[in-house]
Image 1 (cartoon, rainbow, N blue to C red):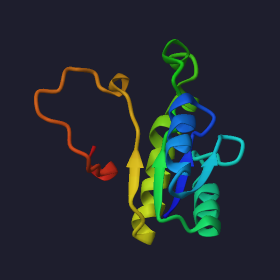
Image 2: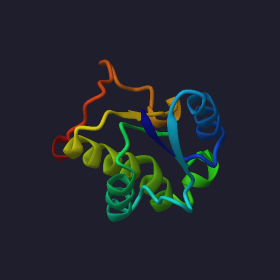
Image 3: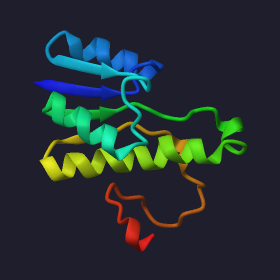
Length: 121
């Protein structure tokens, strides 16, 4: 299996890479190798690698700085996963997105679901 792991410079990405390397062909890319916030970069890399599965471990994790860098936080934590999901859906590639509880306000009264329709948000 060919696995593309984004966010390979961070701790979750590094750990995933180590775990998967033992039994799979792994392409572990940090943000310099793949800026997931740019759809064209995502399309190009996925087209070059042709992975069997994509795991996104990339994240903007500086919670305190996110308020002063909202565009960057949204690019990495919203747009990046959306770009990866879009390309993976088009190519029928399984996509796993690692996340954190910090993305939820805790005020929702119904369950969260894995599907997302940007048009109807």
